[in-house]
Length: 167
Image 1 (cartoon, one colour):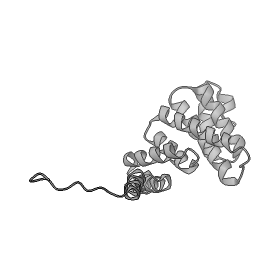
Image 2 (cartoon, helix red, strand yellow):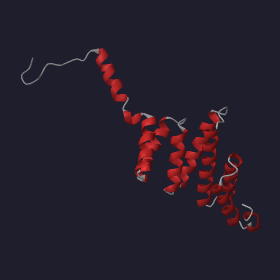
Image 3 (cartoon, one colour):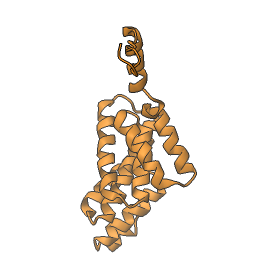
Image 4 (cartoon, helix red, strand yellow):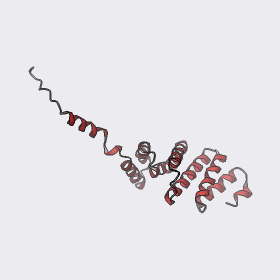
C-alpha cells in the first residue's frame, strides 16, 4: 500500500444497489408531493414559484389531472397562454385515456380545462377556437356563469352583439 492513500473500500453489491435506489428516488420526484408543494405555493400566492413543481408533477404523472388543472390555471393567471393551451391539450389526452370515468369531479375538471383553453385562445385572438372551447365547457356544466360571460364576450368581439346579449 502506498503512503498517503487509504485502502479502497468496496460497498457490498446490495449496498450499491440500495444507494442507487435512494439516489433515483427523492421526495422531490414524487408527483403527489410536487403537486402538494405547488398547491401550497399557490395558496401562499407565490404563483411564479408554484409553476415549477406543478410542471414537474404533471410531467412525471400525466394522469394526475388535478396537477394539470392547477398548472393550466396558473399559466392563464401568469398570462402564459400558449403554455396553458399545451397543458389543456395534455389534459384532454389524460381524459381520453380514461373515457369510462365520468364522475362529477372528472366532469368539473373537463369543463374547467375547456374553459381555460377558451380563455387562453381568446387572449391570443383565436376567437373561433375560443368559442368552441367555451361551448364545450358549457356543454359539460351548463350553469357555469364565468363560462357564459366569457362566451358572451367572445361572441361580442366577433361583432355578433345581438347573439352575445343572450349569454
